[in-house]
Length: 276
Image 1 (cartoon, rainbow, N blue to C red):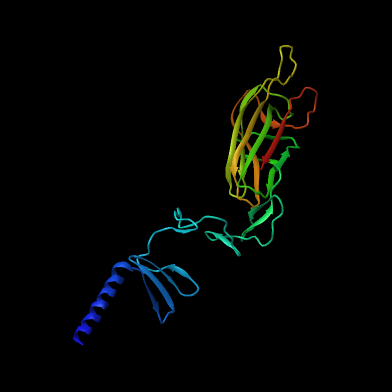
Image 2: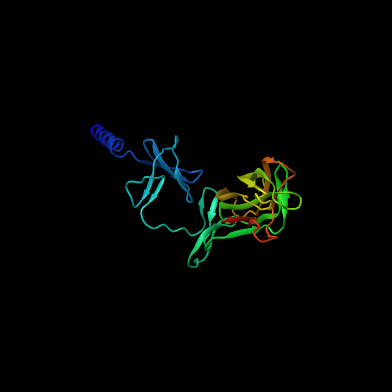
């Protein structure tokens, strides 16, 4: 009897040692919570019937692979992936409820990225000065009618301005003078200047025979200045102008007169364009 007891103890010791040496994985079930836990050394997983997660503290830092033995990311799937529901990028969902039409792209509608028609071509917004304007101000003042209001669909637009002015007296006749004309574009929503340019305006009003002629004028131009905007948020841009420096021998004003009043008058103009 004694020998039989010793033999049983020896067999139990061998089996216990085998489990310790060759079966490091162990499973346990928490009866109260209904959770099942798999642990191997410092790694482990836990599940409760509806969720599966890493459950051993400190949580391990490793990648999980599906159909790949070399996962390079926290979740690395080799093959097609199907999501029946919303797919989130950070906190923003991608929502595709039906088969999109051809050439549709994902666009943000305020709550989710959804398939919408792709914008075709380029949008152009443009205004042209239609009245006689003048200034002697060294401070920027609005150019009447020269503003553009629109709702951008992209995050950047491009601004173009061309303005040609002359130096005249109160009657519109050219004066012997030189000035620097400044043009700038202001974002009305923020009050910030987004583009600026300048040009030298030079006029001469008499020829050797005493005739009054306009010899030169000056142009200021903004050529495709990129400006950041917020997509789907209405914005207004306006055009302003000012005089930076003047040399003149008689009363003067900086003038843009889009409609010529006599033959040979300089091609005054002011065009403000935004391309999206």
